Amino acid sequence: MVSYAKITPMKPKKHTVSLVIKDEKGNFLVVKRPGGPDDDLGGVWGFPAVTLKGGESETEGADRVAASKLGIRINLGKRLGESTHDRPLYEITLADYEATVADGVPTVPQADMSVTQYSQCKFTDDPTILYAAARKGSQCTQIFLETIGADWQE
Image (cartoon, rainbow, N blue to C red; front, side, top):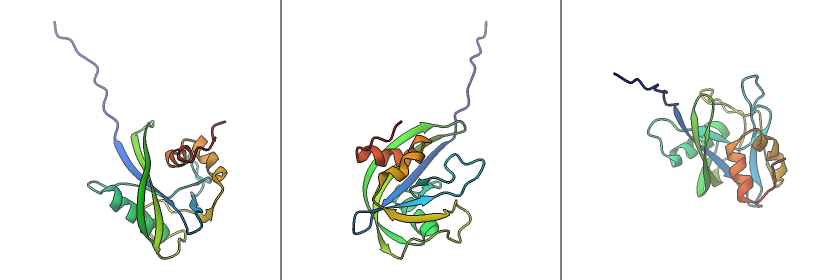
């Protein structure tokens, strides 16, 4: 007798990098995604992030998100943390990095429409601005808030 096992196809895997860009006062840059019916994180404040392309390193992705979404060059700092989440259509691994601006002034939106562009950006020292995104499942804000010991969960 032949036994047949049900084979479940593996979900695609995404690897993403986000930036916690700090200014000389220790404020961090937050960005707001445009609202949209298919975007769970639309309209909330978070950190700039990008999904890595095939063969792209985390460092290359960090440089790309800074240029394509903020119009700046960065000095990449330490890796703050990483998390992996199982989403309905894919599995995502995200790493947060500290960074500082090496050249330019962060502005949004940028002209590169091949990636999600942000509707607003600003520097702040108030981590509570990130609570809504963290509660909606934003990995980059969760990693940062856990790093600073913030009590963001309801």
